[in-house]
View 1 (cartoon, helix red, strand yellow):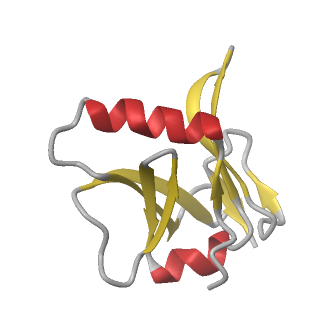
View 2: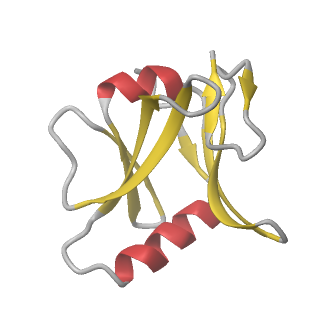
Length: 109
């Protein structure tokens, strides 16, 4: 992998805020799983530590980790955090997705 998956400043700040409230958690795990209304869906969980084969993305001292299978689906993506009238959520701008659902949590390739 080229490691071209990036975190925005807003995403890093939000991850840091969440991790500060969760003792023992060190990173946000981002995964791609089958399912959702468009074929694949993003999953976000807190992780105690990265696995040996995880890609670790670090910005401003906070980390996001991505497993090897998900890395292929996320290559070139930008992970952002949005706070707007529709609510707060992590959003992924994924150049590999050919379409996505209205809620932004699932996509197809």
